[in-house]
Image (cartoon, rainbow, N blue to C red; front, top):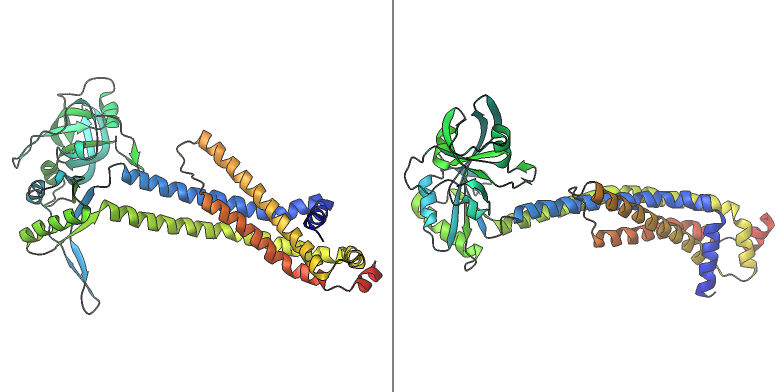
Length: 398
């Protein structure tokens, strides 16, 4: 039997009962559509998170207080020493350090006259705008200050300015941040959100003032942005040397941006695979549907099988015809499901352009191949049963 004859027989069998074939392929179509949409969502979230973290660059080392180690008996030994403004000034003098940024964060009420807004209060240092590439829309950012007590200056995020001052100029106005008086010296350009965190809905004040406001003795984090002329390993080693010399031990934790991105990528990739596995359940259900339909049809097609055997069709060729039908049904279902999923993704990209949905060619191709494999597995047993039928018995049943 030639390939064209085999293909013609397979397609004629599939098209002989179009409604039944459609319903059989529907299970696979739903499974492929589910896998495509779910993996696209997983990939979209992965790209969204990584892009948000990458927007500040990759030449960053985050230093947080505390170090957890495992002792010889398997127990955890934790040591915590606060990171102070003196530590920050020490790191500012490191060779290769371009910007050193303090981080003290909390929330509280911001009041101007009768208007009050609860928002994020971010204590930081003047180098933050250059380190994170933030822009000041009007006025200026926090001034350089090497004294212990910084002036009570505040810089408003775009949304806070709009809520408290509407269209009026806030520069020089007095606001109350957590009950304390601050003079507004600047307004930031609109920045948007990062991982659901609204960068425009916050007020920036000096880090030492934030420590006092939140009754903290140490900084939450220090971020070091280093020059392109050095490496993250070299910079991390230099930071460790300086802080160990100052603290007497390694009681802090360093995380480079590369390590953070690699860790996030691993976690999110595993999440995408888990989502794909969840969607694959519907593919398996579709395979069970193909198996059930083909097994049920076997009794109805005994005369057809007898005729094919009588005109010289071998068992191997008969096996190929039935397996081909199963593969054709699953492939048609897979293509239909993928087409539907891509159509939905196209509509979502127009209606909700910010919704993170990114189809991955590898996952799409793998899903389509999986549908063919499932069809093959589902069709083998019914095809084997059909090939084993005796032509005499089959024709007699007719």
